[in-house]
Amino acid sequence: LPTHRFNNATMTSPASKRPRIGSADKELSASSSSLLDPITPSILQKGEQLATLYQKASPYPHAVIDNFCVDGFLESILTELKHNSKVKFKETDLFRVYQSIDLGNLKDGSELAANMPNLMKLKNAIYSPQYRAFIENITGLEAGSLTDEVDCAANCHTRGCHLLCHDDVIGTRKVSYIIYLTDAKPEWTDSDGGRLELYDAIAEEDRFVPGALPVKTVLPAFNSMAYFVVEPGVSFHSVQEVFCDRPRLSIQGWYHTKEAPSQIENATLQRLKSTGEGENTEGTFQPMADEATTAAAAAETEGNGTESEPTFSSEDGKFLGEYINKAYLTEESLNEIRTRFEEESSVKLRHFLNDEWSSKIKAAFTRQDKGDKVGENNPSLDYHVGINEKWKAVGPAHKQRFLQYQEGSGSSALSAKRASSEDVVDVGEHLGHLKQNLFQSAEFGRWIGWLSSLGFPLGYRGRIRRFRPGLDYTVAHYGILTTNAVLDTTLCFCGGEGNQCSFDEETNELIGSDDDAIWESGDVGGFECYIEADDDDEGAEAEYDEEDDTQLLSVSASFNTLSLVYRDPGTMKFVKYVGSGAPSSRWDIALEYDVKIDEDDDDDEHQLPTDEEN
Image: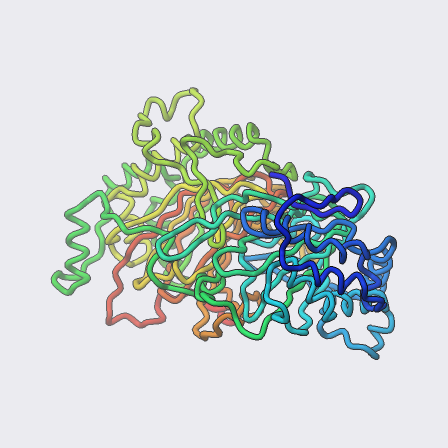
């Protein structure tokens, strides 16, 4: 969709009803103050046109001003930033960015301010009373509503950096703006990434949430300024991953009002920290295939039965051997895995499926990734890539985006003959067959019940997911917290051999196949991370920060690898955004098993160790 831009050379006055801003235009154009010298003078005379474009824009009011500063001015700011500022790398589940100088702390008279006179001029101009009044007029805000609080910083997004969907509502923020300092020559293009992405607001129960995919994008063109009013449940946006080796530089900031906005409880940050109705994204638990065993386990949990070990028989082993690497079915390995799980509350089983199953799944997902032209620094510019009647995009985008396989679209009809044939089979059919016939089976329930010492599961829930490079992720949020402990069971598939890499302390590099090392490094995301939920209620001022989160466990993506992780009610998890440099999509069967816990057990027996304990 076209972006509403204002260009000084081409803009003409539309034949429409005049907004209320005419007098403000005259006042600004008549001002001879040098304070506004950095801003292109004609912009301040065109408030009416800007206001009209802003109000007509979709999916919510926004606009872009081209040629924002006078010729040569932003180039001088770029020089000042490069010579006088340092950057700090920051990464959380929500973003990956290099943050530079905080202009709010850049004070007149300081040595740093003296070294960056043009940056000081720009800051003083955009936060001046005259320009704040101009912003109020072109966004339809009440005159005098914006305060003189300075809140802005210089940011740098390099290759792989991104910022996931949010609405910017924190505290008293009212107007968000971005002044782009990207290279002027050559001009920034779609293939460079880094676009500002805007989302529709979709009604969901008593609130609005963003759709799974952006509906409009804005290129970060040099010397342009994008802006919009910050509003809970409306101003959903994100910054697309940067795909090129050129930095996406910008000055990002906000104008504030005296009071927080109404309905701040609908802000994305508040929703991420809410456990209220409608926040759960994981669905309900379903009983296991063996109803008699499930009923017995439930009775035992309620104190109506006699505690006993789940019986894992030779017949169970024979059934599982049709799918699972038989090395994981021997008595020796079962005892070793059980001991490891009891000590660490997690275990990672590489080369989990037998060769027959793993080879045909690898062939299927390699074919699909190649057909979609994704991965290996080959980002798709099409948000709909891979979406069809079998694979649907799942949102809302402030919590997650990935493709989910529709299990009614053929997985149950995948016969053993078809599964083993040379016919072209969607990878979802293979994964659906495994989920239904292996992961939901009583035999598998007894196997994980014995390995974990947690007994036969009371039920399960889960899905088949595809995380496309350059597009997909999940975010940690309180809606996934459970009232009871669960056993997370995830079978992952991705490019690589699935081998454990070793670390060379002399070269500071991982040693192994290139793809395995890329995934294990974490640089391209795709890992599943477990963190503690913060007990402090800091309200709208809180932001997720890697320095505040207590990371308990990180499980890197690895081909044909099963991870078992005990997760207590106070633990969140997320799959880090999969970067375009990933070797492939991350495909997985992700299930949670509802498990019983003996009230007489030590509460800490199955808890994941904290960083200090690792």
